[in-house]
Amino acid sequence: MSEVLDYQVSDVGIVSNARRLLFAGFMAILVAGVGFSIRGSIMADWARIYGFTGAQLGMIAGAGLTGFCFGIIIGGLIADKIGYGPLVLAAFLLHAVSAILSLAVPAGASNQTAYTFLYWGSFIFAVANGTLEGVANPLVATLFPHNRTHYLNILHASWPAGMVIGSLLHLVMGDQMHIGWRIQLGLFLIPTVMYGLFFFGQRMPKSEAAEKGLSFGQMFKDVGILGALVICYLIFLFSKDALHIPQIWSTVIAGVLLLAAAVVTKFSIGAILLFILFCTHALVGAVELGTDGWIQNITGNILSPSQGTILFIWTSAVMFSLRFCANFIEKTLKLSPVGLLFVCASVACVGLFLVSGITSFVVAMAALTVYAAGKTFFWPTMLAVASDRFPRTGAIAISIMGGIGMMSAGMLGSPGLGYAKDRFTAQQLQSTPQGQAVYAVHKAEKPSQFLVFSPVTGVDGKAIESAKGAVQAGTADDAQKTLVAANQKGDRMTLRADAAIPATMAVIYLLLFIYFKGIGGYRAVHIAGTHGDEHVTHGAPVAAV
Image 1 (cartoon, rainbow, N blue to C red):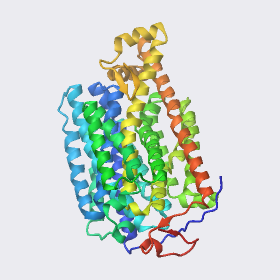
Image 2: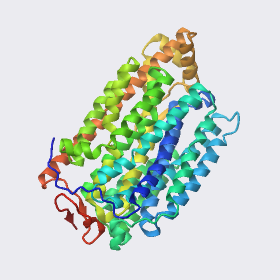
Image 3: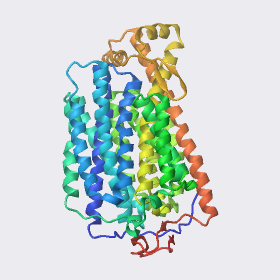
Image 4: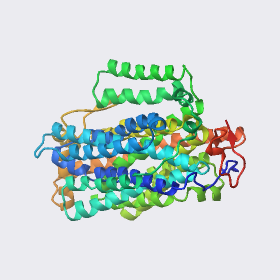
């Protein structure tokens, strides 16, 4: 799978404050990682206190991703016109609002009341994160136009760094000190203040498209109807499943947005390659972030909650370390970004299968290391490929791509895994007479629904958490042992089903690899006469459009 690289590589930034801006973006995405990690860590607390089902927890976790889509897409659409500063300020204010809403859950709140507060608090938090990434991604791609894969991976090393920090905080404050979930969740405000300070007073360069003075319609042309179709479908799902808007009106909303995109681009179909990248990034979001939202809960269920937290910290630390090595790996293995993605998808598929069979902490650490290594380069490398190949889109294409990934994680990945957990757990209980009796007593009030799959009634979250506690304390009765065993088996089956996603991605990346080989190899494309054509220090000449 080696490929001789013919695209230019350089570490030269185009402005003197490039490194400070890179670090400011790093801190901005760190906030998202810290908040995401802490929310994942306290989901079991929410299930115990408010009786949330797996599907409800999946929707709350998903809200912490779907809102990101709106922030990053809206931010990406207007970033080249209004500048990055106003977007950073808007994100800062939204982070404050999300903290107020999430922490304001009334004492003794009902299941539905708590769900409403936590859902919308997570959603607004995600909008703020998306707005920041709508700044950081195009900014770093602009700052380092001749080594985007490397520097976008460095930028996104902040995501696993934030997850490590958040998980460590929960391990100490939650598991050891038993501090309430509200205090833990509010800690994301500390790095929020820090990114504000690093961005304050800094001048930021324009993207190649903005520098060239391209109109919004020209920037959007490569996205076209096909690209808009992907995001409009996900918005349709969000309207229908998250906002509970009737399907007919959800269809109308998506249709109007698609028509608007067609008019703006003068009915351009869009680039087929970009459409494929958008669809593939939907899979990236589902398998990477959707799984990340559940993996600590699942491994903690199979082993123990504290071990699940430690394993989550370990996998995040592996990702953090490897994201600084993208350039080294590409050069050593002679891989293009697409070749790197193929290898990663293959490894991630194997990793998920290995994790589904874990029986001990040591085995789990080895299996999760494989999985972490596989998923490490997906997100930033996909953004780099889109930036390399479609510079005329400015901030638009990579912002839409990021939005697609997050919306997919929120509407497909996280709820899908929650649905799978409910379904497989229920199936395991109903497979034996004793399990059927336990299921009849403890099944949830409402069924879980996901896409076109048939509804399934899961198990009440309070019953599962109570049974886990009894088993850990050695006081469980037969019914509780049966319930825990079925829940663990359901989690293993969920991970095996999840492995089909990176397997599909591997096939797509292999086909893209063959495509680029057929056209002479992968290389970056730059707009003639922009800073992307400058600061050339080594490597073959890049293509210009």
